[in-house]
Length: 66
Image (cartoon, rainbow, N blue to C red):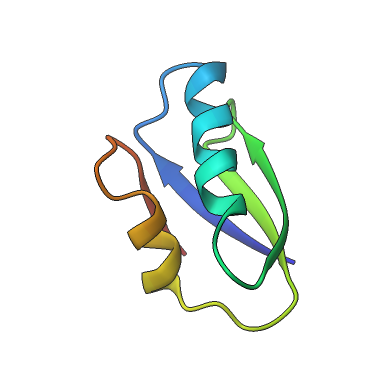
């Protein structure tokens, strides 16, 4: 499990959108998004590059960093 910082979330709905988009990335097994803490904890079945996670959030106001 790896924890990432999520920027740009303004509500619980935002957290749901982030979770939905990150969950669709190949190699991602499970995603838990903490709106209050501005973070996402991601369990992966294989190593997923940060760039793939960033790409999943393209077109939104959210960004992900390590």
